[in-house]
Length: 321
Image 1 (tube, rainbow, N blue to C red):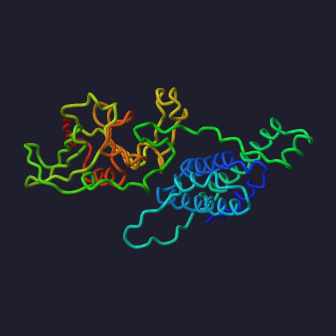
Image 2 (image 1 turned 180 degrees about the horizontal axis):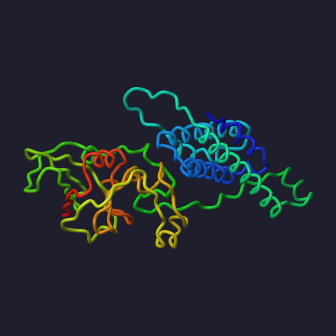
Image 3 (image 1 turned 60 degrees about the horizontal axis):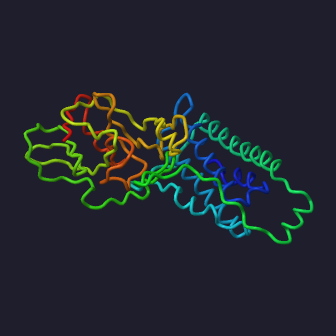
């Protein structure tokens, strides 16, 4: 495993490391670069490899923040660390330690080098703009002033959606009614059909003998007019996501494409419908399940959309009420 703590500690030698906003920016770049490097290889990393490396990076960040707090830098970035630290799900027997290939080591090393370089470049450029005179610096040492507030990051929408790149799956504590469960459901549709009840925020996968598997969903404005009979036209695991012009204009996302992985708004799986404008997908904001939101179409928590993905095939009928 790469020693992320040692790498990040070097970047924290910069004087600007006392600024919580500066540190938060370095950590965000580290996360983005790590995922981009691992997925940009000729042989892309698996989701398990990405989660393992993300967890190691977040552990190093949490340790570094704890030490900086003891050294008097304050805990301005620790709330951000608590929100973003990845917690790997525990299911079944514990997996064997991950053995990374030489290509993976190269990708991780490149990402780490990029983080350090970005930190020092930012420090040099910022220091040239704000370097005080010796007299002013002397006054500041005599009477230190509070650090300037960090620049605002991408905003969170009022409906509870998380910004792209922020992984909220550790908080996927759904109300019981929206958890996956078998239920009585009488319909004339044949087993295997998917029925979407937008009003009640449920998706049903019809089973034999008047039984259905029920999932909780969130409904976005892209699917307000979606109705009638559709079919699943395509399936994708950990799809990439691209910011819409509306989100960019409202400063809810940055331009560009976000590769698949934790924090991606499309989540772990996507099922594209045959109108090629609507989809059923996962989410990085599980707390929005059971509600109507501004962006997207039909969303499910990642565990549920992965379960549905494994049960249906391309061509499956989807009835939208």
